[in-house]
Length: 438
Image 1 (cartoon, rainbow, N blue to C red):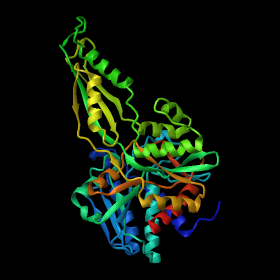
Image 2 (cartoon, rainbow, N blue to C red):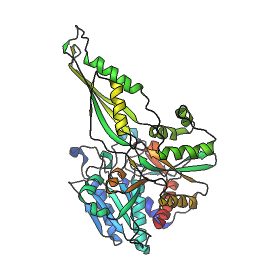
Image 3 (cartoon, rainbow, N blue to C red):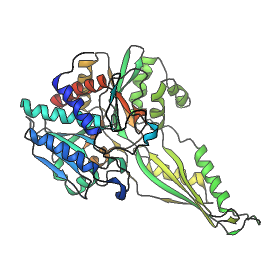
């Protein structure tokens, strides 16, 4: 293992410092505490030490975010937002073999909540921001460093609030880089692919409601609400939405097909993707709309047939597919139940031919000459969705070179969340190249 450079060493130390700040986002104001603000104040202090003008935004106590800008050489070039979130999901400490907020390193592996999601990137970009001020680096375009609160609960008091109330902090920005992508996966036996999220599914929720006549359990009714709801839920669970060839999926299948010698087909796609290993679940989910029944509610006593039964559905929608999905789901559940919709969070889609992707490829090539940057569609959500409301095209790319069997995506929200230390050093070097040349 080579000796890390000063900025690589500082990035690792800052990552560990941030992990030790328990900025857990429970989604409940009564239990969240002030961890996000403590993390934001830490970042603010580190940026101000090297001369940045820093905006700390705290829409409510304990929910702070930090934004700072480094001026570039070309005022006509659109600014690049480089962002990470400072909150993390809760932990069940009994499930961990190492302290979740200890930031301990064992056998070259860093353990801790946020090691992947995503204090690793927060510490990396913080170290680089500090390095640039110390060295007097002037990038080509303005760099806006943003450290958000509340991403794990939808960004309500973080990116979403700032976009709505302080859009001036992102003036002139045209593109953004953050999670989820950049990690390596096997392309062939001797080559790696580095995924870049060029699109994200939209998110919405729906409720199925079945109604019937309340009755004593000893007297079955023909319109039992539980039975009617169960039929609809079973139909949703058994349904497979058709594959949609989005630009990101098309490019992914093209690249992997060429290198793996696979001719992907609509009919055999799921089985063919399974041969790609752990990445198959991500790509399979991104190939079609998905609807998952998640919460069922009916009755309160075993001997009472309830008059109403409900099911809540988690729905992930491909770009441009909102109307077709609503029509397909309505036909699927039929007239026996009512279908009501929640407020949607629209899908986002950024150009896969942006010059920024060439910069990402060049940066990877400097460290992994045979590495190949490959677009994909993220089936989940990031704060890029909120920035998209300002016309900012978001890309998910936190570069990490990991062993072939290391599933970075599988570390998100997992017990014993971890990442190899040498992958973090790689991340610092590649991110440095990206920010200097974007």
